[in-house]
Picture 1 (cartoon, rainbow, N blue to C red):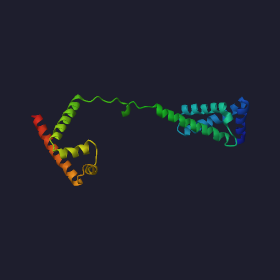
Picture 2: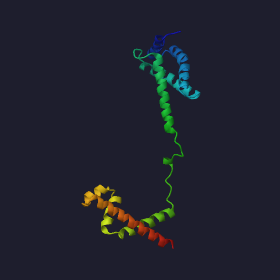
Picture 3: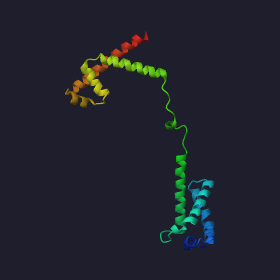
Picture 4: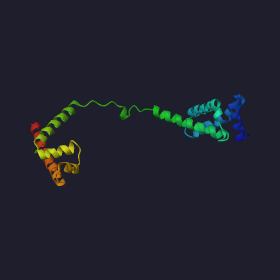
Length: 188
């Protein structure tokens, strides 16, 4: 049985002389071992065979990249096999798109009834807001249309925080009352 140095020397021969006999010996020794390794890593028979063949072609084409001072022949070839399998898995994951993926689905058109309800609700809210006293309308606009916190509203308007909270609470009570009355009128 040949040792690690022997296989390293064969790769050097392939690099320097394009020695076919050395390549055949490397192929006969490593191809089945690479395939077995890849199958143990989870590749099926066909994928393991393809990747092993690819590694051996890489050996033939890029043997000059092998440095026996940095690694053994088997370490170099198994590292190439591992990297090729990882590359293949990455390509496979990006190629497999699930057609049922929500992000790939077209945005459904809005339901006309829902759209009309939303517009009607918006009209009612705007009309109800106009019926609020100006000081309540101001804090509601700042809180819900500009997104300011109660503290920010207090700072901006110069009102005490408690007053801001009271005005918002009173405004909601009045809005609820106006909107419920409006809905009761529309139903009849």
